[in-house]
Length: 323
Ligand SMILES: [Zn+2]
Figure 1 (cartoon, rainbow, N blue to C red):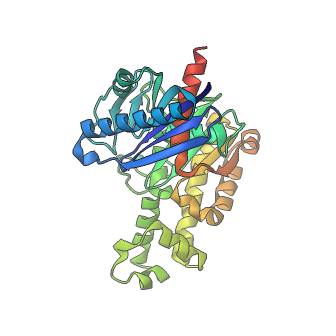
Figure 2 (cartoon, rainbow, N blue to C red; figure 1 turned 45 degrees about the horizontal axis):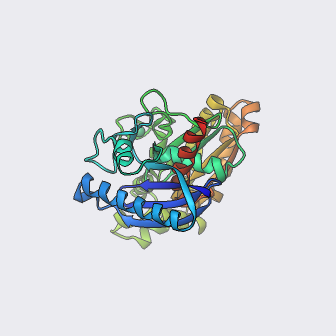
Figure 3 (cartoon, rainbow, N blue to C red; figure 1 turned 120 degrees about the horizontal axis):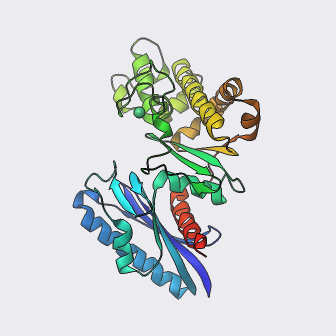
């Protein structure tokens, strides 16, 4: 009988469950809205029901599921499979998710932070396929990170490693919601880009001002990228600044970890052509020659499947490690 995996991506908006091959190929995928406002019991019931359905389908299609991986945003104690806290699921405090899933299905279960799972997915079959050590940065609403060292997710002692978005790239920079100032996230996230543009619109001219007259709170990072393509100076300046600080952050990572690759994912990569040269130049100026020549900077390949595939991948690694 062929073997397979189940990957789960438990997000604040959607729960997604997939049947995944041992090579990382997605056989089928199902998505339902999380309905987190109904409370964690309802969400867990939904997750169990979706997993049961996926297991039945795997069986019907002649495959035996050997492990199940769940990616969740927040602080996770991976060895015990406990969700300590999650910014996207506020009532999830110290939830022993691994135990709860194992009670329903007699399967090896791994619970992993979603950004770590996405990094593992990209390393396994995405942009970082074939690499051994990789850093993945998700430039979305915030800036998430995942670090793979010698083929394994690096968790840190409290499961809090790889908070790359909250490393300081400018000590005199704006306040970050984490309490620090000048974090990478205030420059390289969609939210950061929008607030920087908004700040500049108060004293500079821009096409954004004209198209969003009096409704500046409505524009989004995509509008900034579109304006930059048309040559809007404010948008270009903000993206340039973003590239500079992202480059500083990446140069630090390159010197610290000497990875094969730095993978960038998330909505902000839509402006790739406008920032990548600035990022590369900053890394060239700041990092040592050997690690910077090693570390290729690449765009992620798996899109929003990265977490799902990666969760299945870490579960497979866990069962293989026991062989
Ligand atoms: Zn911060």
